[in-house]
Amino acid sequence: MKLSVGCTLGYRCDGPATLMLTIRPQDGGNQQVMSEHFRIEPDLPKEHFEDSFGNRTVRLRPSGGRVQIDYQALVHLQPPFAGSWEEARQVDPGELPPEVVPYLFPSRYCQSDRMVPLANSLVGHLEPGYARIDGLCDWIYENIAYSYGTSDVHTSAPDTVIERIGVCRDFAHLGIALSRALGIPARFVAGYAFKLDPPDFHAYFETYLGGNWYLFDATRKAHREGLVRIATGRDAADTSFANLFGEVTPDGMAVWAREVSDDSPSEPAPVETPLSNQVA
Image (cartoon, rainbow, N blue to C red; front, side, top):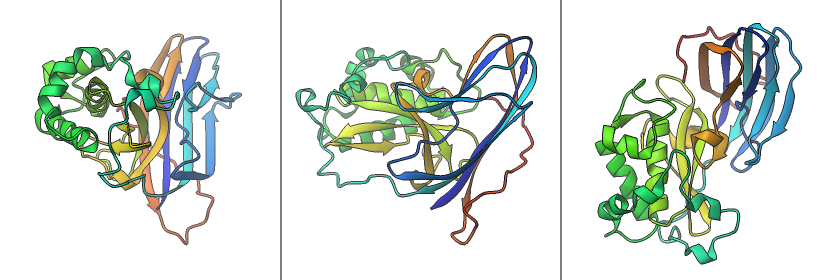
């Protein structure tokens, strides 16, 4: 599948500011970035770097006024890894690769140490591995209401259990916390999502089973085959699409992911997308 993905972001800066934007898809694995367009008004120097998780970040330093960022990429997407259930068994912590071990531990939004009794009561009777994570996703989907604007940057997995409502990042945090509570490494993924309605950045999670990372989306609002990875981390604190420093106010956002036919040119034309007032 070939997708055109991107976003238009607006900000108002009341003085010198720093914007760190993580909106570029990762290039590798099951996805290939074929081309990119990046435009900023007013034109500002762009500093590109990868953070400690390998997420592609750009840093801008406006002196003030309004800034608009238009980004678009053409991505060739292969189906995500989908091995058999028999292969997706829980790996003993003593056998995990060192780079996977950090995803076993509690993090800012995923306090897994507080979730052990709940996780065991929900799926402890199931076979260790894929069946348990699949059971957790069923429980989250059936017991947590999905509603925009019902959580904020302070909402963590235990909060979502109590309030029983949230958005995609809350569903992902809860899935991660419950997975880690079972001794299964889990990580947060932020990305673009084909056919997500309404269009927005999307969050889901992956668990490490049988030597591979398996993708799960407890919201069931996006097609697994149409998820384009932007950033990976322990939770949303590592994967925010925008980190703002200084007196900065979001001033509109638009996000899209559209399928492109195989006979379309490899270089997508920049898309002029009107800004909405929706801000994640």
